[in-house]
Every structure is written in C-alpha cells, then in structure tokens.
Amino acid sequence: MKITVLEKNAKKECVRVVFSENIGGNRFCSDGKRGILEMKVPKKEEMTRRQWIVFVRSIILEAKKHKIDRLEIIWKDLVAFDKLGNDLAKIFAEAVYMADYEFRKYKKKPEEGWHNIAEVILLINKKDKTFVRQNLRRGATIAKQVNFCRDLANTPGADMTPIHLVSVVRKMIKGTALKLRVLDEKQMRRKKMNGVLTVGQGSSVQSRFIILEYAGAGENTKPTVLVGKGVTFDSGGIDTKPHPHGLEMMMDMSGAAAVVATILVAEKLGLKKNIVALIPAVENMPSGSSVRPGDIITMMDGTHVEVGHTDAEGRLILADALTFAKSFNPKQVIDVATLTGAAMVALGERASAIFTDNEELAQKTIISAEKTGDDVWRLPLWDEYAAEIAGTYGDIANIRTKGQSGAGGAITAAMFLKNFAKDYVDNWMHIDIAPTMTAVFDENLAKGAKGSPVRLLVELLS
Image (cartoon, rainbow, N blue to C red):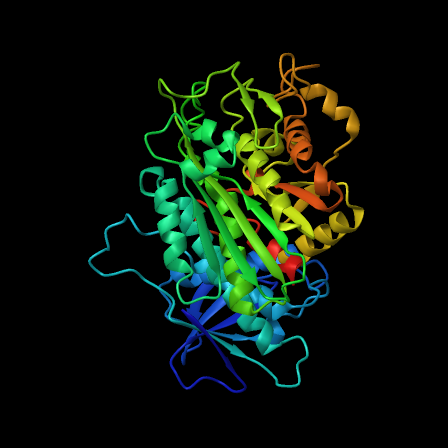
C-alpha cells in the first residue's frame, strides 16, 4: 500500500471517503458515479486524539472489508475536529500502515489471493498548515518498523530462537550504518553474565547477547542505551506456566523487538543521536539443567540473587544487560520488557507502566505517549519497596519475600532492576509493556503483537 498526496481529485478510479454524524453506522454505497465509503464520526468537539487514531485505522479496516482497492480522503474533512493536536500527518501514516498489517507468514494464500489496499489518496490544500509532507514520510518510516517489530514478536518460538533472532537482525541491518556485535555463551561467561546464562541453561538452544550501535552524533556524545528483554519463548522454566498462559509467550521478546525496530528507525531518519541497543536473548525452558527455585546466582556486578520463582526470569537477564550498559558511559538508559502480569492487573491492556526517579524524563515520556498513542502510566519507585525483595540467603530476591505475596508485583520487579541501574539511576527508566504486548479488541489492529512502544521511543529520541 502507498499513500499519495494530491491537490486535486485523482484521475484513477477510487472510492471517496466521507464523514457524517447523522448515520447509524459505516456504509459503502454509490452516488451513481463512484463508490462512497461513509464513516460515522462523533461530534466535532468530542473527538480526542486517541479516538482519532483508532478512527483512522477503522477507515482502512472498513475498506478491506468491502475489498476496496483505492481510497480518496479529503484531508480538511478528516482533521475537522477540535482536540487533535499537532503532527497529524505523521500520526495518520502510522495509523494507516499499522491498520493494514496482517501476519500471514503461516497462512495459505486463498485462491482469489489476498486483498490489499493498493493506495490511499489524500486530497490537500497546499496552504493547509495541518498537513506536512515530511511528517507523513516520517510516520510511514516509523510504522513500517513498528510492523517489523510485530513480525518478530508474532513469529512462533520454534522459528525465533536466540540464534534466529541474531540472523534476522543481521539481515535487517545490512546496508545500514548500524554496527552489530554478538556475544556467544563463551564470551558471556568471560564477562560473568550469569543472569543471562542461568535463565538460558535449560534450553537446548544457546543464548546470545546482541549489541547494536548507531552513531548519529559525534563520538564524544554520550549515547542513549536501550535495553530490550529478549526471551524468545518463555515456558516459565521449572515453575511452568499453566495452559493457556504459554500460548503467546513467543511474544516475551517484544521488548527486544521494540528496541531493534527503534534503532532501525533512528538510522533511517538520520537522528542526530548516539544510540546503543542491548538484547539478552534466551529461551526459558524446563529441563534437567534448568535453574531451580532456591538457586542463588552471582550476577555480573557481583550481586547474589535468590531465585524465588523461575518465571520471574526477565529481570534476571535484564539485570546483566543493565550492568553491561554502564560500559557505554550512557546519557540515559531505558529498558523495555514484557516483565509482569501484575502491570496488566494494575493498568489493564491500554497503557504500559513506566518507572523512573527522573521527573523530567517521566513528564517527557507522558507527553510523548499522548502525542504518539503509545500510552503509559507512571507507577512509584519509592525506596520503601526495596525491603520487600530483600534476600534471605543472598543479597536480593527475584520476587517479593516480605509482606503479602505477589502484591505490587510490577513495582517490586522494577525495584529489582533499579538495583542494577544504580550507577546511572537518575537517568534510567523502565517500561513494562506487558499490558500493551497485544492489540486490544477495539483498537482496530490485527490480533497479535501491537508493536509497543516503538512510536514512543522514537519520539523520546527525536
């Protein structure tokens, strides 16, 4: 699909999209000369930016339902609402391409073929300041990498092991300015990355540690380090997940997919930043060699961690990655992970949880989330929570050891990570994307991975 911008009606045969408050629902009809796709909209003063994003996606889904090849949309009619804000061309492109996405890799092509929208034509007035062509191109670039992120996360665990992930990343960065290094298990042992190695030791597939670097600024400019949880399949380990909770656990590497997609966007947009992406990639599987509940791990920084539950594995691999991040002398560090079901219990499925002591970074993230539609909500990181994960036989535990079991699980997981970000804690943020790992039923996106929080991260880096 492509988006074409014109200043007069298209000569090609296409369906005009019109908007009305006064219809019961969307409908596809004809005025005798051309097809008309009539979309129901709320009152001008009621449409919010978040609702508008979902509405734009609905246009694409409605067109696909009626097997429409080409759409024609009058821009001024599409944006004739009071509360939409700025950068609408970028947001439009993101919404259109994300709505058009389907994960078809394992589906047999129908005899009549897949129906894809060939073109969306925007009719604009060149004096309309709400439309910026450069922003449209930017949105398309971001959306295509969001969809790549979704491809990675949707791929079954058998076909997206740590080894496969390295191969895909190597292929995707070919011809770019990105530099790739990959640590194998022998190299990780030398660096004492025992958190990563211990989680992966139960799998027949070896673990890897992926390092991607983008130099968009001078070599003396401190980088932003992005850390992505790369559990390519999470069975829970010895503490195995009960059915059906394992069915989507190939998506437990959504954080890794997001940081890969983000650094690819940064390179394609030519952002004037230095960025490093760190991805500890493992499988968490049960076997005779798996880590056991009660084991104590000596982490890369020397911390002794008690394993209270083998399904709290993501924080173990992230801990070593956060320790390793220090070696880049970072300006800031942001880790992204499908870390806890507790975050979903707290927030539902419509916002990721963010944790940081940096007030400026928190506020910037909240504003960026509202702009992009990658919604977030801030949860506390008070010092008092640290006592709840104190170790009995070691320094710290990977689950709550004091107070009511399981309470505040998203917070105690973040406190665990904070322990390993202590050298740059004032410039660190944790994003728990477990709530937004998959698309919500009414977001007008294909079932499966959502691609959070790529749009947010790009906005933060811009």
